[in-house]
Image (cartoon, rainbow, N blue to C red; front, side):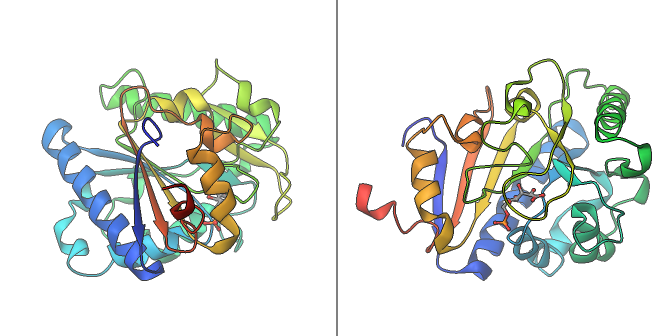
Length: 250
Ligand code: 6PG
């Protein structure tokens, strides 16, 4: 498993949330100490709420320097923020409404900007502007949070789709993937993911077990296998069910 990152397994979803919160708090503290800010990209899906719920409660809620957070979304479904499928809506409900991250340091994709490609370009421009203001000309997130679909997708990079091959953009549009919900999306591209100082995959559930194994075996057909931070920490936090097929290869 060398080169595929550090893998840790938690007993259940609650423990996974706690382990993830500890990692996020550590990356946040390091970034604030080194650069005075913490740039983080959140993800959607059903697993991150376990992290968010851990973060909004002690001890993490008191240890994290929320005022230094700058929050983006690694991918977003093109629906209004109050739609229950919105990733930023989820992040607000479960995390951002409960902690003092300044509102003007939360940067959701501008879903109202028009066609998917226009939203992607506007978000990339926003991202470049924020990182320029933060004196970091090459956008290098302190942490990008990712999930894994049972088809191997991550963020909104779906198997076989052109978005996966894009090298000259940071954010692109992605048509509805093979899994629900069937909506247009925008997504970070591999070059932006690979520039991060840290990438954290959170994966839970029996239906992910075979895919986790394929990704950690390096199956290049799966988008998640292609996330390889050039000079950053790659970490997988799994629950026991998602890790079920790994034991047989140990
Ligand atoms: C999205 C997500 C997506 C998600 C995976 C895993 O917008 O759909 O960002 O990439 O992370 O589908 O989702 P679960 O946590 O529900 O397994």
